[in-house]
Image (cartoon, one colour):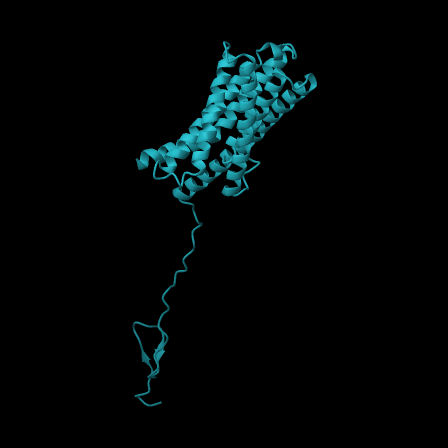
Length: 269
């Protein structure tokens, strides 16, 4: 081996260079593999999840209360129908049956049609709900007004009791609500005279007021001689409680809708 080919020792490296033109592989730099940290939900995600869960619980509660309300409505309607049909549909019996069927059944179901927590109509389209609403309230208003009119004619329109005066008030509100319902039906054609939102809000208010007064009248009807002579005291208390429960639970949906309409009116006018 010649002198030019003698191996050269490097002071800085422990390897031997034989004079080749190919460089040795450079030292590998350490590479760091990032380790993914476990995903954590942010506070916003946790808040949205908790809000969604709370909404689901509220919806389940509304469904449960609606089922309870349907049971109260059904019990009152079936018992009053049994009581009046057994004793004969004439005079006060016909009056009691018509107002119960009209106000406590048809109108109670009608005012809850558009309520989202109604288990009977929740899956229907809005147009279908509107049609059912009109049919039920037409039947309810017709039966209720006819039943109230029968009693007013019997009394000669001289009603001195709380039950009688409330009944006359419910009759007047029923006529007004049905008239305003026709105006609300043609609200698009009457928009030059009255804004559709105001027209429908006024109709909702009259219908809701009629329903409340009618069921309060039903409550006082259990204190009349007709019902007292045909049922025991404990059963009278039960019917009063069921009627009040039905009134409160049935009013939740219409009150929400009326509140929303009032908010829209204040924001637009």
